[in-house]
Length: 238
Image (cartoon, rainbow, N blue to C red; front, side, top):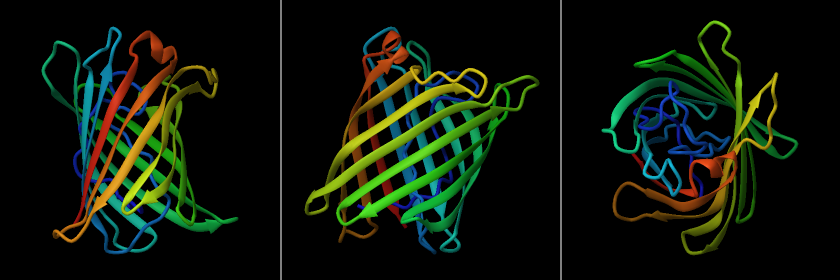
């Protein structure tokens, strides 16, 4: 399933001002762009088990690609802590620029400026890699985020996925998200979530609808706070 989103309007999730579990409400971005494509997407994630049981994030995006190289967008974030009401956390402006294939791998760059409503603004950059071969699709996002506060360090993380067509419009695979510390304190055994995902597309009823669902198991330090996380993504191509 080819999914080309341009992150854009409304992200509803954990804020950059507060610590968010890796992958909660996030996606693994592809490195390709389709000119003229517009998409609205909602992403939801909820932690299960442990002291953070019930914490969730909802992210909504509106994406548009004015060319086959560039995608632009804006987004808003909301989160809900256990026992608290949901609140808006941040608004982001983002762009993806694709460099095309390098050594058979699609490569792109992602940039975002995030306005945090009750905290410090942040900037985020990602290197996006995607390899497609027949029914197989693998993606890797290498992420660096810098809060715009004096002395704040660059925070490193990743998102990755691999899936394959299993019949009709269905795909099955695995997704993983994790934190890696900072350049000064690289910690590969930080928080990680990994688990199975399934994807499908619904066509012929008007706009194309894309659905992804899965459950990611907590690994490393993430096990101190939760057993895992449920995730679901709903995208509509306009």
